[in-house]
Amino acid sequence: MKRKSIFNNTVTFVWIILNALIVFFSNRHLFAANGIEGTVLLIGNLILYIVTLTAMALTLKSFDNKNPQVFVRAVYGGFIIKFFVLATAAFIYIMVARKTVNRPALLICAALYILYTGLEIRELFKVLKKKENA
Image (cartoon, rainbow, N blue to C red; front, side, top):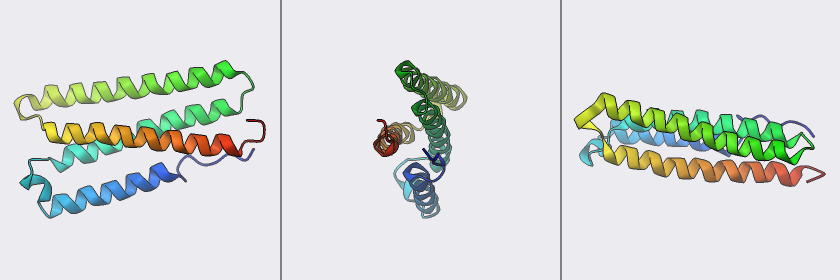
């Protein structure tokens, strides 16, 4: 099976579009008017993108192995990596910002997590359907 680049997929396209929208709305002061900090969204979006690509790379690599346990370990490993990286990033932000934590931006980042997870699953299913012996 020809290996597909993890950068040539829907996740990367959505990341680029979301960054453009965040910058556009920040420049128009639409976020500030609603109490949303654009910088938190940009950093959160970048972290989510990197962690999603890492989890996808782990799972894509496991598709080549005949042992089904490798796939299960890759999925769980991807989840654990996502969970701890995102929990650590949120903890660091909350400790640094203290009383100025931007809750709306954190909630939007949580929604972006759900979006990226759905896109990751969709992309992995596409690859799995194309595989001959799946």
